[in-house]
Image 1 (tube, rainbow, N blue to C red):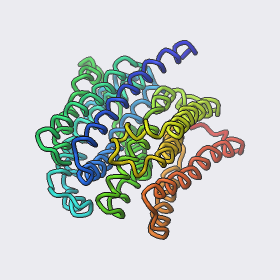
Image 2 (image 1 turned 45 degrees about the horizontal axis):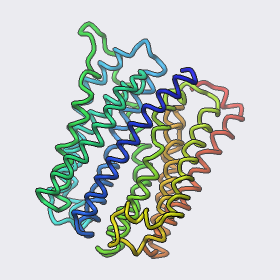
Image 3 (image 1 turned 135 degrees about the horizontal axis):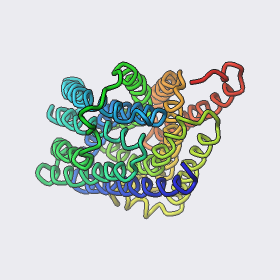
Image 4 (image 1 turned 90 degrees about the horizontal axis):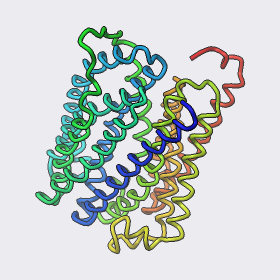
Length: 403
């Protein structure tokens, strides 16, 4: 891909993902306005379950995109293999999440078991979308990938809002999200279609890589959504709602630069050096720095963006939430770099970071904004390790072996 092509595709995906983030933010803002703080806190915890369970979809996407990027001549065969397993996996993960309602409903102090069941229903279209996105990303179909992202954002906004208008509770919101989740699948119709005479590749390498990527991504999304679950469990209903409002800023800073990972992923899969990964990290850090400074200088505007005056207690600390989102975004791009290069041991490092955060939270019993500081500082150490260790390994004799 030439520099001009990279700039053009990057701009296209960036605009689409930015619009998706804006629309997703708009949905969070609408939810914060319609729901009372206690219900908004419950919805935030439910969305964290979705994000964690969505690792299967992202694992499929990463595995497919990497295989197609490295073996473009086998695109049709890989796509046909993917189409045969995507629906089955989506139903399996959806059923598993729905069954987890017996655990999460009492754990998160939810009023209805249906809320988590609707989370499971939402996982079916999300997983199918992951397969579609992998084909589009790996084969460089940036327009189609952009449509998928836009469909995801608008499906959440329209479906979720209608659900809350019908029933202004977390359960009503999740029902609407489960319906709206099918919009990106509709937008991606045709991506998994191949000529009838196309022969399939072996399922085993793709399934194995999907499983490995999903485990790593599960570790990451557990880390990046841990504080939402901790906030719901540790804080009372009011403080949980305040923390949920702060998390809008965290998620905004986290999602804003994610187009970098999407566009750079095929290059990271083909690049055995460090240039592409350092460029990607620098871009993410730059976007994050702008966000943190902007929130720090304009706290009143930032407060409007997270729900208004009823969350004024944390207005002066919102820049901390933006900083946490920036650090998690850097970890995110480094995790995808590891997936593209088939680096091992990343999941263990992420789980260690998660364990440390839980331990510090239990020990220190932090206030609302202090929990975000714990997540930010601990995740920064993880990001530093993920950044430096591969560079050191690249200088060792063992690094000369091919991936």
